[in-house]
Amino acid sequence: MKNNFKYIFYFSIIFFTQFIVSQNINDKDVSNIIVLSNFLESENYSYSCFLKEVQNINVSEKSLLWINSKKIEASQYGDATSAHITLCVIKDTIFYLNFSFNQRNTGILKKKARTNKDLSDILKNWDLLKNEGNEYLYFEYRNFEFINDFKSKVSNYLGELTPVKLDDETRVEYELLIGFNKNYDFGTACYGGNKRPEARDAIEKLIKKNRIDLIKNVLRGFNPEGRMYAMEALFKINKFDESKIDKKDLDVIKKLIKLPLMIRTCYGSLVEDNFYESIYLQLKHRLQDDATNPTR
Image 1: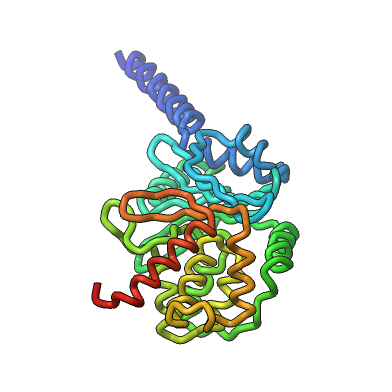
Image 2: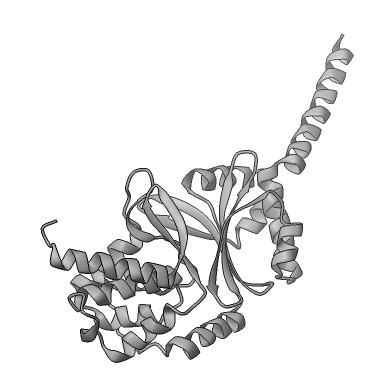
């Protein structure tokens, strides 16, 4: 009888060990990150290779950053977690990649890392953002050679940025509006809850602080939607009168509306892509109406 219990106990240990190993191998949350790590170590940062090798990817949004440059929004789904992914690509080369997990998913991954050495070793190289007591895991890759090439192409067309001084009250807003890797729509009241895009609050803060120098840089900056916010701000600051806008800024606006780039706009729950020229004409008409009917 004692021997029977011994064998039952022995085989139970083997089964439990095999179950844990099997769970680690088949756990999509773990395997997703391991496969991503292998892709990054291969140093073959092509978008086509990324789609082929990195598993469980769902691409939700593609938009042009510049000619031959695009920004891609995607998600990666596991068994219990999901990651938000931003990629920036020149032709087929990834020059920026960001994987991020919200607080809930971060907690799940940290818990799984306690029993999985491979996952634990990988996450040691990731960053942990702490904000108001919450923790967010994220990984960021930048190819500075390609980033500089991208920025150079934009500046060659729109003009160089002017050196500016940033304080704590405007740094976050400025970096949001000018950063090529930042994600937001152009609008005022958006989505089901008529939420204001964070970039709307950012540009209005720069207007309130009278940081015209920062707004002029955003107009020449690297975020397509940010440029549209800056264009709108210059109209507002100059009382909707084009003749009052600085000639250099007006020249940049004229260059922008000639670009074959579409930006993401939102009007309530309607989200769509529009060309600069189309939004520019709508904007002029709307702002002129606001100026002549201030109490409307």
